[in-house]
Length: 502
Image (cartoon, rainbow, N blue to C red):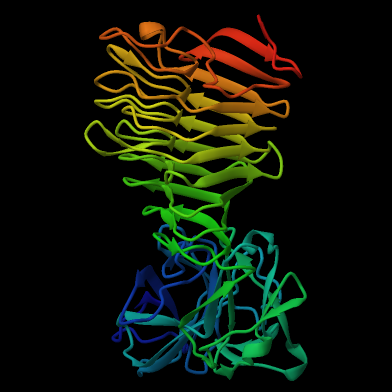
């Protein structure tokens, strides 16, 4: 950061200083960036740490040669007000030094509430009576720690090993060994921490960053801190999060966190993907399951998968996917696009659905939305007449939304509507474990089922305004039947699978 101060003398050379004293006027304060210096100053900083401004109320010290130091207040509008002015001692050129803060002792120990700063500017042989431009530079280095990984959110404190206090002699710093220790860093956001520290020092990579007061992280690629520079340290806490667009081939557990625009592909068998605060927004398949025995483990309530042009989640024909949580407080929302299911079949081309495998939803809350665009898809199941494997819902809460378009509509769970004839089958749906299924058919066109067949006013369908489990069973659970968002009826199933409609 280079801070420009225009200093304007109150006396002309012809007048000369009266009795050796002529007050120095500071006409304005501006912020200037030159070269590669990091422009960060007092209070307000950009999220990336590379820019900042004075906020007003800061006091700077100014001295001319060996004269009496002056103090000035920086105003929010960029002007400067003298508190005790500095004075010219003669009409000869003078050396000027300015510094911030004015205090001689600077504490760096606790920067959780805001960063500490030391700034200094010098001008040699400033001409009497002429404006003087002061370029302030940072005497400290900035350290920024960016946390990633599956346990980053569990970090509540980050510290950096440096000097917790220094002596400030007009912006020149003196340090004492007894003040070496851990500095509490400022939380910029949930995963980013910063502190300004003494520069010109080598670091111990094995004892430089500490998390939560005890866990010391190993730092690589950093040996020396220089003034005016910002050093970013990226740390992975726990397991690394999956990269956007990853294809998984080896068995194991992988974690999705943050935002994904390309989705992921599960290619191998026996793979578990943990969604922990993950947002997928893509034009293709959000999670494409090609391997067998895959699991999507949902953690927390903030997990979404949205596709604008395909299925949110697709399972290859003959393969099995389980979507589960640790409780129904864990939640996943899935939206399909371009006439595709939220969870299930997608279109490889117009009106050409790709068959889907088996889907199990257990111990979790799931919202799944089908889409209508030329064709019409169920929330969970099929579109365009393609087959879907079994759908099992156990001890879960499921909100499944079909779609409608003019003369056709689809169930919340079940078959999609094809352009010619009914699909060869609907998926067998099994509901157990005191589950609650909210089945939203897209409309009542052609007696569309809530679970089961799609309906049409264009040609005959098998739909009958029913809950058609396709050969599956419902035990000790409840199905809520909606047209759109309007509740039409509730069907309770006992331990023997007997239905009571209300």
